Image (cartoon, rainbow, N blue to C red; front, side, top):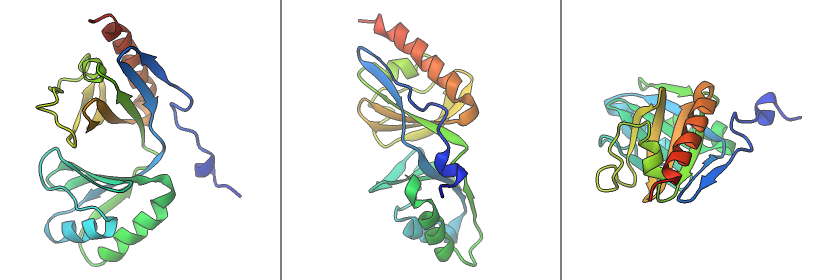
Length: 189
């Protein structure tokens, strides 16, 4: 029998939006952990997760379907496939026995969107204060920032491709904000 969490549908399920040069779709459900630690816990956590935790500001590390995002000097957002939630937790717990750390499952806290196209950065900049020029916010960078009045985690995954994490309670607001921004940038030449 399927559990309630297996039956849960994301707040953006079934949506898609596209105009010339910009599209946004919901990202597939994912496993998400916030990992907090210092010193001795960082390298073992990377080995357990299968991805070295980035130590450089605003960077990500990816191996296969798993990504570690730098969120602060002692904080990382760990993303993986939804199907690997239990495995990831077991792997991290095993390597961190006796080491001071915090590992919190936030899989159901966030929703994620994938934004793409030549006008994706312009649509984001309608409400995001970051300089998203590709020479400044390069592929592989991530940052905790704002989009309108919502906090997001923004990750540039390609030259014209972004992944945005948002609290589920703000998902509809962010979606509508991006639809409006898309209508606005659709008129730009």
